[in-house]
Amino acid sequence: MKKDSSITRRDIIKATALLGVTATFGGCSLSKEDIKRDAPFIKKGKKKRVVICGGGFGGLSVAKSLATSDVDVEIIVIEKRVEFFSCPYSNAWLGEVEGATYQKLVYDYFTPSLKYGYEVKNAEVLGIDKKNRRVESTIGDIEYDYLVLSPGIDYNYNTLFSDKEKQEECYKRFPPAFKANGEHIFLKKSLENFKGGTFVMNVPSGTYRCPPAPYERACMIASYLKNNNIDGKILLLDSRTSPAAKPHGFLRSFKELYSDYIDYVPSSKIYDIDLNKNSVKYEMFDKKALDFVKKEIDFGAANINPSHVASKLIEIADIKIDGNGWALLKEPGYISASDDRIYVLGDAQGEYPFPKSGQMASSCGYIVGKSISSRIQDIKFDYAKNLPGNVCYSLVNTNPKEGIVVHHSVTYNTKDGMKVEAIDTKKGDQITGEATTLWFEGIMGDLLG
Amino acid sequence: MKIILILIISMFLYADENVDSQKVGDYEKGRTFYFHLFRESLGYDGVVFTARHKELEWAKMFEDDAREFKEYLVNENSDLKELLYSEKFDKSIKNHMEAFVRHYANDTGNIPICGSFEFE
Image 1 (cartoon, chains in turn purple, orange):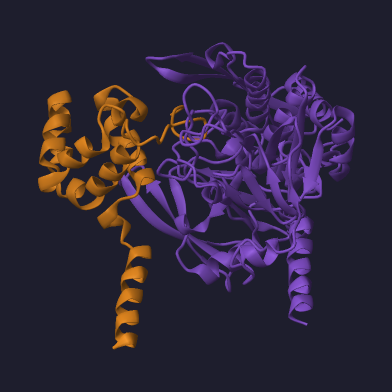
Image 2: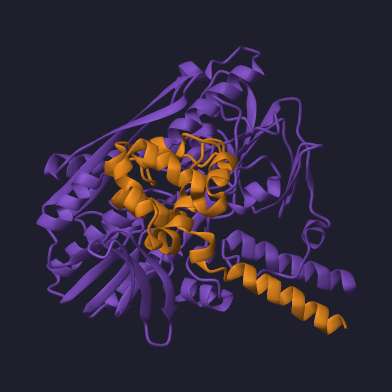
């Protein structure tokens, strides 16, 4: 009888994990042992096995790179979501750019898995047994020779306000939309239901995923309001003194395209929210008084963004991290500073000043794939000669479709370490707008078939 | 006794989560103050400035009402003397500046990236 009950509970959490709807706050009272009991042990064969935790841009790039290399290796991607949702280009869908449908953002894992010959296991990681080289997951323990962690981010609401109940309620009512995919659907509904007034948005504090995203989102929402004759205005609060990415292009767009629709407030920060009144309290820097002043404003809709931290999986892996929880690596590669068999890439790494973008994660993923392939063949791999690069497009207008772009080039030497240089465009144009779509279709075609 | 102990611990935990930012300092506010009040006078941006020292070195400069920090900046540009020795600096700016320079000190691993203040 007890066993049956245990199975039922385990099945429930497995199903929850498989559906990718595990609660962001709180959690289930079942222990790791409850879930693992009776789960199979997925032992590896003679071939070397690489297990990749996270089927996003970084993880899938490692998988493809390895699968298309000339080394005979077993590749398993563990991903808790049943489908791939692209955060890049999701703002185009939000702003109703022609041809940017929801379907264009969602992909299955079967196609790339069959095309390239790696396995995608739909499961959630519960623990990592580094000593025995096993990933403990909801479908059992999976042995590995090399482990790649590309798990992305989690949210940290403590930097907004400390009340846990308020944090939870705020997440439910105004989800950030920096993770796939329900949060994005909800944001889209919020915009469609917005009748006018103030649409409050804030840019996450600290280092965060996809730096241009909030500014691009503001442009897309503003464009939507403009195209639909909605008498509303976006209040965009940013703790920085100018946009974190492509500042020239975004500031110019705010001024030239959306002066009636976007009120960009630099050096400002939300410190409280009244969920009954739908109002936010924020501080902003007053240039005349040369000090911060407090303000409060009612809103009709909101997109409240907490800070970002490395995914919980980095904590579970118990590897070396920096003061903010991002994983530290052995320079100039992607091997964890504390475990020679574990690689970390994408948004979760904190060793290098790389922008946390899908393109950068993918670029690093290909390098990690090549380096593991070389390692298996006992060939020395020179990370200093295999540096990543990044190109990042943002749309600033929907009709006509106009975009801006930044290129990041990376240099490395032992004295200065990894350095990143950025070159960005100063004004939106239609060629870059079209290039934005082509970039998106290109990277999706490359990784997801 | 047990209940009292729990209450005391809870109070400490609560206090920890609700620390007055004026006392502890907010590095993002410090960044804003640096940008508007110091950057031009010093002639370099926050990335260069904060990376000049290790966290403990900065912390030491802020001991004794930031005596050493004030001297350090006045040596760089004496025009900053009035601001640094003002009540406003001690009351509204000092703690945020300390949080800022310590956060981005060269041994913290907090690297300004796209998504931080390098383009300002």
